[in-house]
Image 1 (cartoon, rainbow, N blue to C red):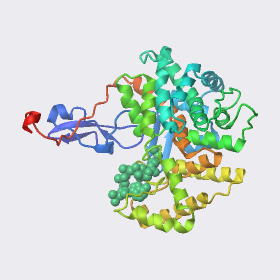
Image 2 (image 1 turned 120 degrees about the vertical axis):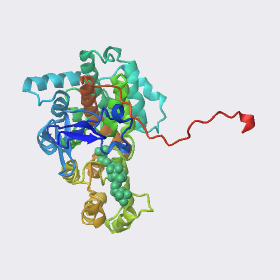
Image 3 (image 1 turned 90 degrees about the vertical axis):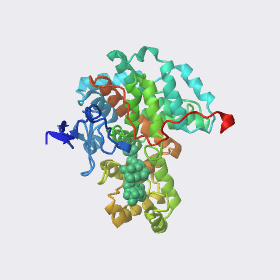
Length: 422
Ligand code: CMC
């Protein structure tokens, strides 16, 4: 089909390189005086993009064409960041250059560190991240001109490089330990682990299995096409807001339990279940229409098949628990819950499969992160995708401010009644 006729007018049908065609309804309102109605954007493509492709029915996720499992198994986070940002895997020289740029920006302005003291010690680290990342715009004035491509690149590198430093500081602040400066001789992941778990009094030795798990976690969550937080970043950016403000908006959106907060919710749920014998009780609750309880880490707006990220994450969870000698019953609960749900008609009919958050919480907990840091780790990783998507939008000649319309069901015109007469 090349076009779709509505009220006698043709609307072009556009094809991507792969995936469903889209009906271009940009002229619909002008032609018919009607809007489309699509709460939650379940049938709406908001932009054209070349970055990430998901086939939710087949359980496929590609970054710039490369399958996520190949990248997670064979690549590293810096290489994937280059791929997402620039469209291609780097050559050896490009890799060295990109690595150098990212490591050069790992330190933060010393005055930014004083911001942390303004927060309560028990502040959620995501609350701190929303504030601190937004505040970066007050410190890096030379990279807030969004119309200068060089400044956009510098802002991108700053955000990717500084997120681990800021996140580790949020954690250190919450436990009352001193901040650690970055060590640029370490990999992206190892550096973050050291800043989080190291102390100035002792050398910190990075466990290669943990470092590898961290890299995989970061790769798996780096981008996911037009999800809620990415759409938030694009929407914020569409008004011309600076990149630090846009990423801060993305962090705020990611925080919600239906999105990035789900890994925290999934682990809390596994702990609440506690032992495999209690699983049927929770499965019954998830199926009960009158109970708001959902199986966290299950279901996805796009994946109607096994989330390919969950497959890798399940393997990583086993490796980390084995290596660290952790005999955590929640892994048994997770395994058994997965098997029961995968064979239950309710979950089969609704195509509810484990998503990436089902096992990522187990991995992060085994590494030593408190649940409050889970979404922060997601934000470190997703910053790459947000920045790649924001950059793509800024370079798109068709870009315009995002401004959805509505189906208004409120009061029609009525005249103001003074207080004394009401
Ligand atoms: N447990 C039990 N029932 C569920 C679940 C679940 N986890 N997820 C969906 N359903 C049911 C839901 O009740 C509904 O049933 P019915 O058609 O009878 O009303 C049906 O499945 C469709 O659900 P929906 O809420 O309309 O689907 P959605 O696409 O709007 O929601 C979701 C997707 C991810 C918000 C949802 O599956 C959910 O809340 N899952 C648990 C939270 C979670 O794990 N979120 C992480 C998403 S992956 C991370 C990311 O990429 O950000």
